[in-house]
Length: 111
Image (tube, rainbow, N blue to C red; front, side, top):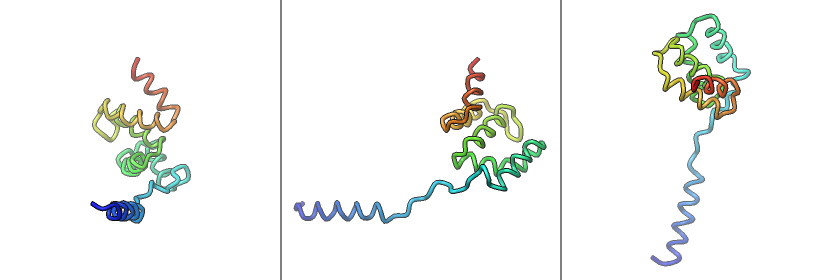
């Protein structure tokens, strides 16, 4: 392959990589999101089944508080089948995202 072809191929691949749209990380601010706050209140009121889809979506979007809540739900078996491995997964994600309560909870899980 000629040098010109290699260079052309490189620039084509480079340009293609930057022209493909990248899926953005969620732009929702869950600290102020009305749906998320309503779901949090539903959890407090014991309406776990109603709150679960919104909490799960926020957790999957990387929101540490929602990840903590998912971990607690799996740990207690509220609204989901009890699963310590899933609780650990969500708590670890939350702790890795800097949520102090999750970090403490993981420590207690290991006692």
